[in-house]
Length: 104
Image (tube, rainbow, N blue to C red; front, side, top):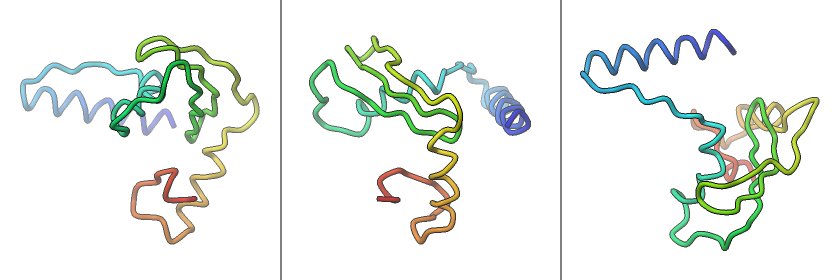
């Protein structure tokens, strides 16, 4: 995983330099609970629960507002994404991007 992150960071720095744009760091784990603000025309009422499932993390998050949330629970042994990712690759839903809804 560290090799992939290193390649990604180097690529981002290079693209920012070539295009003379600032490189702005984003905590993607913070972005997960906010995804609903980009994907849904009407936000669910606050507070609500979000299940964050990725390759390395599975966390139940209580979202109080667009910028306030807290972890309610998380896995300690294996992330659900480690199970879903290979399933998506082997299924007919594979299109180069694994999206949770495609696997259902």
